Length: 491
Image: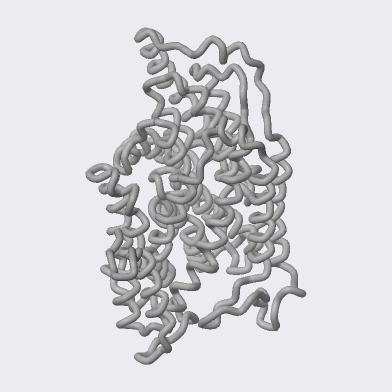
C-alpha cells in the first residue's frame, strides 16, 4: 500500500513502523511500571486484550482463502496493523514505558534469536541437494519420512525439515495428489520427531537451561515410538491408495530420473549445519557459567533501552549462526540452489507473520504466566492436554516454561531438581510431550510448520488452508493423543 506525495511515493508500511517505534520511545509521561512486574501485568490484563492475537490468527486462516493475491502482498501490513491494535491501547493504559519494554523485550529476546536460527537453517539446508532415483512411491516416501523423523532430535525439527522437505517434494513432483505427504511430514519431521534431545525442539532446550539433564528427554522414546509407528503405518496405507489412483490415471515417475544413482551434493554445508547446532549447545553452556553472570545470577550482556539486556550467550549464538548462513550462501554453487528451487520467499513470509504473532501474543503469555496456577492442574494427563492445546496456538517454548513452573508448585516426594523448583517426573514428561507433539496441530504451532507449507506451495503443491490443515490434525493426531493419554498418562 502506497501514497503519492509531491516528493514521490511514500511507503505506508515504513510510516506505520516508524510511528510505532516513536510512540514506544516517548518518555513515560503517563506512568508505567517497567517490565519487572510481568506477573502483576498478567493479573491486570483482561481476557479481551487477547483479541489482536485472535485477529492475527483469523487473518492467517481467512485471508489466504478469500483474497489470496492481496494477502501475498499485504501480509506484513496485516501483521503490523494487529500489532498496533494491541500496542497503542496498551501504551495508553499502561504508559509508553511499559509498552516499550514489552515491545523490545519480546523482539530482542524471543523473536530475534528465533528468526536468526530459522534463517541460518534455511540458508544452509537450501544448499544441500539429494539427487537420484526418488520416485515418490509409498515405500520411498515412508523411508524419507522415517529418516526425517530420526534426524529431528539431533539437528532440530527446523533443521530436519529444511533438509528433507525439498527431496520429498522433488520425489513427488510427478504426482497430482501430494498434499497429504507434506501434512504427515509436518506431523512427524517438523514436530513429533524432535522430542528426544534438547536440540530437537525449543521447549526442551529451555528445560535443559533450567537444569534438566541433557539425556533425560530420552524418556519420551516410548511415546515417540508409538506415535511414529502409528502415523507411518497410517501414512503408508493412505499414500498407497493415492499412489494407485495416480498410476491408474496414467501418471508415473520420470524414467530418466529413476536411473540416476542416489547422491548428495553440497555436503560442505554439513559443516555449517554443525556450526548452528554447536552454537545452540554452546549458548546453553555459556548460560550456566558463573563467570558470565552478575552478582544476582543474571546473564551479562549488551544493555538496551528499558533495562533490557541482550544476553551474551544469545549474542554469541546469533553471530555463529549468521556466519554459518553467510558462508553457506557464499560457498554454495548457484546451480545447487536452482536445483533445490531455493528462494527467500518462505523465510520472508515467516519473518513478517511472526512479528505480528510474537507481539500480539504478549497479553496471552502474560495472563497465562500469572494465572496458570489457578487452572487447577494436578494430574499428568491434564498437563499434557493444557500444555499441548496452548502450544498449538502460542509459542510452545514459553508455554512449556509456564507449566513447568506451575508443576513445581505441586508437592512432590521425588523428582527433578531444576532452577525453578523440584518437579515430578510424570508431570514433566506430560508437559514435554504436550509442548512438542501438539505443536503439530496447527500451522503456527511450531515455526517449521509454516516454513514447510510455504516451501510446498512455492513448489506448486496445493496445501490445505489453516482450518483445512486442522481438519487433518483433528482426524489423525487427536485420536492418537487420546491413545497417548490412556497408555502413558492415565495407566
